[in-house]
Length: 183
Image 1 (cartoon, one colour):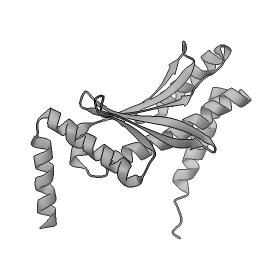
Image 2 (image 1 turned 90 degrees about the vertical axis):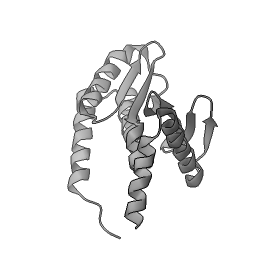
Image 3 (image 1 turned 135 degrees about the vertical axis):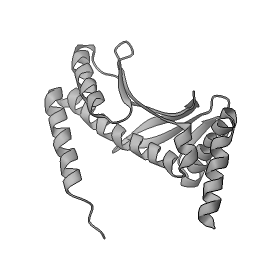
């Protein structure tokens, strides 16, 4: 009986008009943040929610979640400022990541000298699957922490983008080979 109820709820949510679908996903996003007790701010008129998460030990970043154009957008600035003389290296590293990422895009703003990671998923996905908002936030956060570490390595150690990407791929391969052990 529960499966039938779930099925009809999904049919109902998908059959609603686009503005009503937006409202449902917006409500789900706010509800998730309230239940998780994350530090956040809500901007109703813009359908934007800002959350502060620790992106590295002792370093916080503001994550923005917006509903716009039938998508739930996730954005975070992974690097606030970088030296102009390293702009080319940052573009190269961002390009490598953009080629590797399955979703989202790394944006280098040369004028403001900052780097942002942005991702989006269609509202329809969130209407059909209950935990998808949490999954999007988690995936966006995990990728952001990897990007932060990589760009910090370039900034502080001035390591070559090719070396950073090679090390990133090795660590990703190790994580895939070593499944988590049950406790």
